[in-house]
Length: 190
DNA sequence: GATTGACGCCGAG
DNA sequence: CTCGGCGTCAATC
Image 1 (cartoon, rainbow, N blue to C red):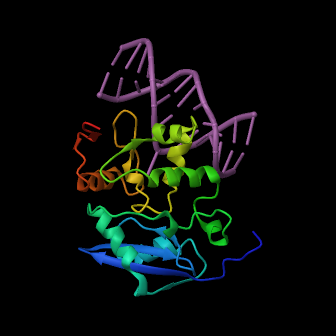
Image 2 (image 1 turned 120 degrees about the vertical axis):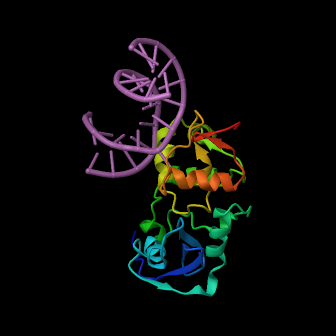
């Protein structure tokens, strides 16, 4: 609150086959945001930078951006929650899309869904001892760490795909890359 | 308060 | 199958 986020955010990027990924880091190297694949380098950078007053692009630390790309393409890679900035009292987080403990808890719960598996919005709510499944959807829609925190693995209870920032088509694409069977936009044998 | 969700469930066509 | 209508509750206005 009292703190200013005058520090510049550090942005690293990675591209592969005309898909551009970006990651924003704090001064101490915690991940603040990630992007879904974008069509250009500029778009990828601005997906991160538009949330901050100052930024600088350096590719010293582009492993995480590459990791995004790998996960998107179906590689199974582990996430250490310690890599993420999840402290909602941290000054950087004030420009984040997550601002409440509920939202943070949803993000943490989603991060636990294993590769190649899916969970419903309702199941996430239940894990949090809540019936606020709609609020779960809203919180996931704000996920600052798309791909890294696998919000693409959260689907509707009836087996339908559900929403996605990058469009349901992209959600289906990622799930297929993880080996999940999908027919007519419904999870097959979930 | 009232409205709005990346939702869920049931019942009517 | 689709579509209301109601349920539920966190966030936002």
